[in-house]
Image (cartoon, rainbow, N blue to C red; front, side, top):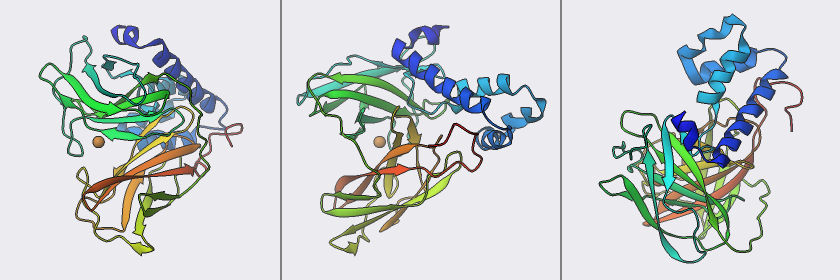
Amino acid sequence: MNTAAKLSAYGVSLALVAVGGWLVGEAVGPGDTGVRGADAAHTGPGADHSGEGDAGDVHYGHAAGEHLPDGLASSKNGYTFTPETTTLEAGEKTTLSFRITGPQGEPVTRFDVEHEKRMHLILLRRDTTNFQHVHPTMAADGTWSVPITIDDPGSYRAFADFTPTGGESTTLGIDLAVPGDFQPVHHEPSRVAHVDGYDVRLDGALVPGRTSTVTATVSKDGRPVTDLQPYLGATGHLVAVRTGDLAYLHVHPGDHDGNPGPAIEFAAEVPSEGTYRLFLDFRHEDTVHTAEFTVETGHAEHPPGPGHGH
Ligand SMILES: [Cu+2]
C-alpha cells in the first residue's frame, strides 16, 4: 500500500478513470476474441488464461498492470516521479529538479541508457502545445535537474521516460502549473507540418491494438532532404500522446542512425481509437527541429463492441 499512498489524488483519479474505461469496453463486447488477440500481442505467455472464462478477474489484473498506457500515473511499478516544485513562473528560466524514488521511497540512482540518455523529460501543455524534450543531468544523490523556460501560462504535463537498471522502461507523468491566463489551442487533424522552413509529411495509419508503421518524410524548398543527421541514436525521435488524457506512447524508430532521409520510419502502437498528437524531433545541419502532427486513428481490427465508436 506504500505505493498507493504515494500517488497524488490526481494520479489516482486518472488511473481509475482509465481502468474504468477499459472495463466498460470489456463489458459491452460481443465476445472476447478480439480482446484476447490484443492480450496475446501484449503479454505473450501471460495470455494463456484465455480459455478459463473468468474474464473479469483476469482482465482487471491486466488492466491495472499492463494495459494502462504510460504517462497517466505519477507512480507505477514501484517507481514514483517526485518533483521538488510543481509551480513555475511563465517566461522565467528555472531549474526543474526531481527524483525518481523506488518502492521504499529511496531515490533511484541507476538508470540504463536509452536513446543515448538515461533520462528523457518531455514537457507539454495539456492542450498539447509547447512541446519540449530535454535531458536532465543527475547528481550523485539521484536528484535530476534541467534548466527550462516555459513561456506560456497553463497546465503542463511533465513526462519522465527512463529505464531503471534491472527494471522495465517506464514513463511517469506529473502536472506542472504555470500561473496566468491562457487560451487553449484546438488542433485539427493534420499530417503535414511546416517548421523552420521544412515541410514534413506523415504517412501510415495508426491502428488501435496493433503495431503499424508510420513514415515521416522531410523536405525543404520542395526538395527531399537527404542528409538528415542522427539524433539520439536514430534518424528521428517520435513522441505521441493521446488527446484528452495525454497517455504517452513509446514510438520506436524503425531504422537506426545512418539513414540520411528523406523518409524516417517508426513502429507505433496506439492503445485505443482517438486523436493523437505526434512530435517528431529530427536533426539537420546541426539543429534539432520538431514537427507536429494531429492524427485520428483508424478503427480497431477487432472492435470491442457497440458504444465504443466515434
Ligand atoms: Cu530524449
